[in-house]
Length: 336
Image 1 (cartoon, helix red, strand yellow):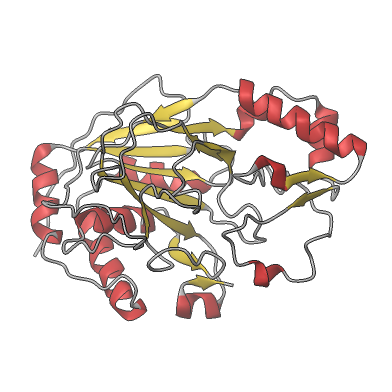
Image 2: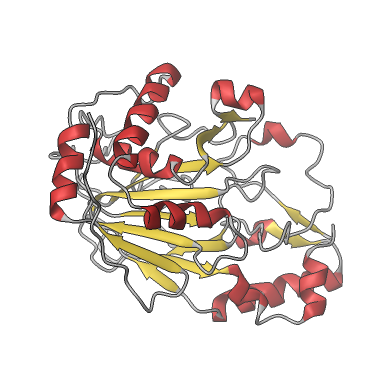
């Protein structure tokens, strides 16, 4: 069967580092027909591997060269694009209520949104991975994110989130982070915020940027993290700026510590630059999908203003992607 579908899209302008594609209704409907009946146990690695292969093949048959180039550019440190945003993708016909009993999964019976998340995500020339340190989700690879009225991770906290890099405490951070809207929820104002790190550096003296590269800082782990992977190195100094533009900023800013007075001042300067840097906003609804470089951006979430814990709050699923992995990581899709 030779496919001749063309993906029609509009590229939005004036969005800074975010490049936006709006999928045509006809392609959206075709994607839905092809993925709607795929079943998967996302906690079973073999099942997940087959699901990822199917989803990637289906999505790839519909996308344009421009979309592929935009997705792959997320690995290019000199690219002006640090995020790619899709609108009007197919959605699941029914989304169960969010659990109010402490459960970590909605128990969805269709996986349309997940297919879009992993299918488009693997076209970035990177791979879905999980982290052994992240133990609070129903499985390591596709994280179901909905607010909980108890302590939880950055994806499940009910409070607002400061700007951060996901897995900033880990030596092998995800290259790309994907978020897909499952349910909008009651709150029509809550937004995911992005800052391109290069716009932060423009606001800092060269001496501070240089200092941020030096091993004069600690990034501590949050309470919900299994930090056994890092045993023995907690008190070792490290840099916050870890490559060309990667800022290892934890979601809890008190976990970013300068080991001397100059380093403490550099942390304050960095935090002030982040607060003052230009922000780019996304309010998720079903059918919307965002990928961004976890090495060239930091991201946050505004406070919820209408959170009810009644089963109908926002649901946002997440996946991590890495370009390079070892043979062992390839077998398990896990980073230890």
